[in-house]
Image 1 (cartoon, one colour):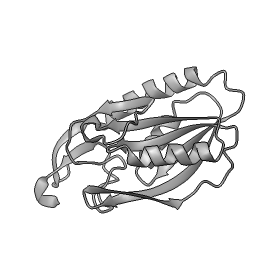
Image 2 (cartoon, rainbow, N blue to C red; image 1 turned 90 degrees about the horizontal axis):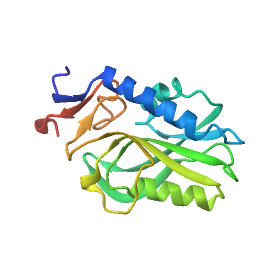
Image 3 (cartoon, helix red, strand yellow; image 1 turned 60 degrees about the horizontal axis):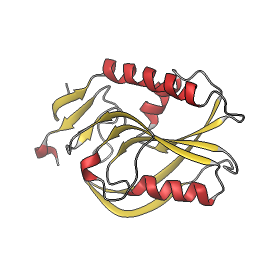
Length: 178
């Protein structure tokens, strides 16, 4: 365990197993889809989750990325900025947003609104982690890996000031580190 980590919430083995379950569920739910579903990874935190998840999806998919910024240190600023938009059109497409964590819900709300404004047919959300206790808007993921309490988590894509993304597990950052 990393020296800055207070405890491990989910091991790499637990994350991989949950990704298998989610991949199977997505494959089943989208098997009748007439067009390739577009998986939209939200940079940078979703990359490890997306990479593990798609190993377990048996249907044809396409992948693209968006980057949205709303954090400074440990706090969400509430002002969502699109830093990188999609490279492809979403008109009449079924979209699955891949997110590392849903906290306040503001980023997901903004992204869903933006994709529907661009004439997406359907927009669903899958999040590795869901921190319901911090939600300030009425947004829910359609698929969730794990529910967590209000702790600052790192690893498996989740960072603090761009550090710790490469940890193979999800842990809680020690308070003295922030």
